[in-house]
Length: 402
Image 1 (cartoon, rainbow, N blue to C red):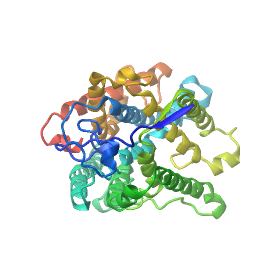
Image 2 (cartoon, one colour; image 1 turned 90 degrees about the horizontal axis):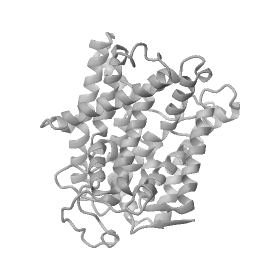
Image 3 (spheres, rainbow, N blue to C red; image 1 turned 120 degrees about the horizontal axis):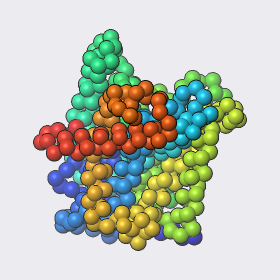
Image 4 (cartoon, rainbow, N blue to C red; image 1 turned 180 degrees about the vertical axis):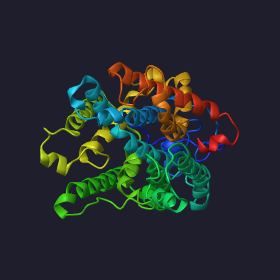
């Protein structure tokens, strides 16, 4: 069993694009790298280069995470149907739904891995300006878009004041709360950078783990404490339960599992995924388990599962890793293209799903069809959304909101 910390977290800078941030930024391996010597104070090398194959895992993981998000929202209609556990289609939908629980935590971890780099930090003004240019147009546009979707397409009586109220709770439309998570963590980053610059690797791991465990403990004791809500979910507090993931993203970047350690992490991820799939909405699951650790982003199993997925990808997709072909120059370029489009896919697939019932063969009622139809539906939504987003990203000006 072996692990290695290869030269500290390598990072890149692209002068032509805003700072990278997982779902809402670029992949982080387009040009020059920062070595361990740079982290100790030397000036980083700013020489442009081709996409970094050794960082391709970041983009591939972003692609897999956004595929998981699309899958969750596509199969959820089947997963929650009465008697879902009595059919192969229902069981498949449930496990596909639950296996994607790593998506949001992993996106946050990737944001931490890309943003919490002291060698790239140019001060709060420069950082926040770039983050605002990248995030604010997208946040404003997609909230306005889904307000119009609800009013014009869904024919809902939603006034502007009411829309603003639910938007500030992250609940204007499915999953839009994620914008508030990345905004909150971006605002917090200038405060975190001084600590990150001085902290040791062990200190980062300890603080990040404790922050995640605080979230899990808050959820586990909610019923015992008699509190109806675990967290106050508002635009300015959505980031709170994800702070630990954000810190661990930087702490674990560069931690490469090999051999039995990599296999162990993969097996652990599979076992936890199977456990959560069995537990979710299962009347046979013990009541104490559902009370102490309900399936969701805040539970301890979900935390360990997400960390394992993060580490597995970092160990697999490397030039000397088992999936070394994905780290080749050509595949790295493809990965970056797919990874850079994740924000557009995240925002647009929710609209695409509205037209699923109109599609031939795989459409009809959203819960209709067998297992093969379910899988084809997932593939069709993901593919169509990606095609549209990749085409729209070629349009000047439109790229900023995608």
